[in-house]
Length: 293
Image (cartoon, rainbow, N blue to C red):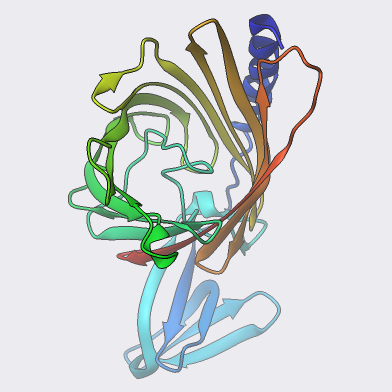
């Protein structure tokens, strides 16, 4: 596929994402009440005294809860409510399938991500604008094979709250059991939109074996919310190499399961004139930890 076709497909994905940025839910303020016995209720407080509170819960009516049985009370932001129902927080708002966007973890927030069982990584917010992480592909489990490990620092700069964020970071790795196997990528990205509805344009330079790539890799990511528990996600790359250029386009979904997220989709390499179509499946799972709602 020629470069012009790659740009055409990218433009379509960009246009779809821009239209989705306006689809932000809004409604009246609600709260989440978590009790000591493990239950969780979403509703509006209609009455409260020193001993108990009365909560109006959709489908249950008025629910009385003793304050001594309340473990945590959380105000649900209006942007996460539509038609009286809670749109859960995005457990992986700082990434698409894999590529990062301009948003960052808050201090004390973290997540663990697993991709196709073998790829394992985590990240943790040191401050509201800086996070660190790392990961491993545990090939040592297979007869002590050389094992890739990596480190992932990231800075995030909010230029306009929930509208425009800048991010910069790196993936720096090596292969344990082998010599002179350093690899990685440094990147910068600009994200337009909120954590729920956004597009990102990024630029990165890769390196391996002590040498840098001769040209940058371009990245376009998109995410927009379809329902309280579903997102559309697209992650796309374009890169040049000796004798030509190519890329990867993708489309898929994120399904929120309580506080975790399941990602799945298809990745398709482009840039060949052979006419063959190849679609590679993607499956990932993310579990947040730390100071998360």
